[in-house]
Length: 142
Image (cartoon, rainbow, N blue to C red; front, top):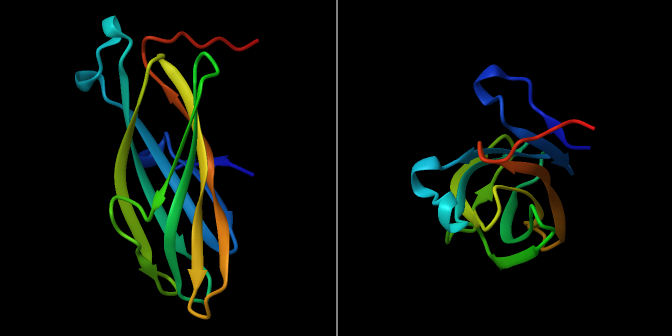
């Protein structure tokens, strides 16, 4: 289950826990770097990965599934995040910021991180689905 956090300082944060590892994401529309007149919309997203378990884990790779407002899909796979493969001991957190462009004023992202325990066992953890909403998209509730 994906939960939109109610913390007022993280009003636009989304969070999900898999195997005692919490992933929270805060997307931000980058108005000054976007060019809506050219169909170029840019977002930053700040991710926190917190190991609430008892085992040490390493984030080895990422998979992103990005859907734009027209239903176009982009998939991104790669080693680690921002060039790193962080190791998180029990209670540790790791934070990073990255970004994504879209050709539409809205979209949604979700994905997984592949983690490895010290004994070599690998498993995937979920990245919560989060919406990318610009002020150029009017949202209406049906």
